[in-house]
Amino acid sequence: MAGFTRGLLLLAGLAASGVALRLLGSGALKGAEPTLAGALALVAAGAVLSAAGVPRQAVAFGAGYVFGAWNGAALAMVALMLGCAADFWWARTVARNWAIRHLRGRLARIDRFLAQNPFTATLTLRLLPVGNNLAVNLLAGVSGVRAWPFLAASTIGYVPQTVVFALVGSGVHVDRAIQVGLGVGLFAASGALGAWLMRRM
Image (cartoon, rainbow, N blue to C red):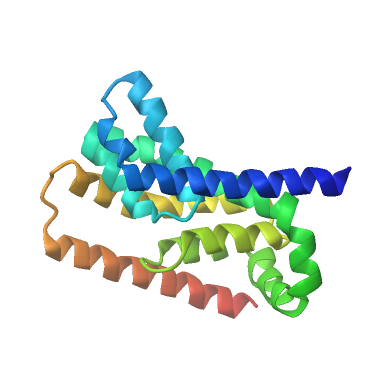
């Protein structure tokens, strides 16, 4: 029964990815309106898209375009956290046993990195302006990291880029120097957190 349930969840995950890619290709978000129903539709679509691997910056940009800078940033944050939690839950409930069997050595290293300082390690990864959001979500899910520190650190780490891309999407001119400064600042913050982690290990 457990194997049957995991199979259904796997199929649901694949189906969600297909729907997300279809939505992205058809430009369904362009028809969203700044209403409550439109906000719910954008959050739902943004969650599915980000869970399927669409860059979180694109979700923030689209939300800013439709709902303005600050409302868009808030809605994008909700969508991104729902997508993050969905990926984490899917990996924890469906893919973890497979990962333990096939990625034992690598998974042990990931566990050591995340499990000792789950909040700081996750925040370090999230603050990097580069990286794969989907991969981090799935790796955390198959590791032994606790859910709440991972999700809390992800929420904080998502904020800077979400706000910047929602501002850009809303039409607010964000000076290139500010964008470069933000990138340098995020690299510096993640580097400092990484060095602190290395000293503790």
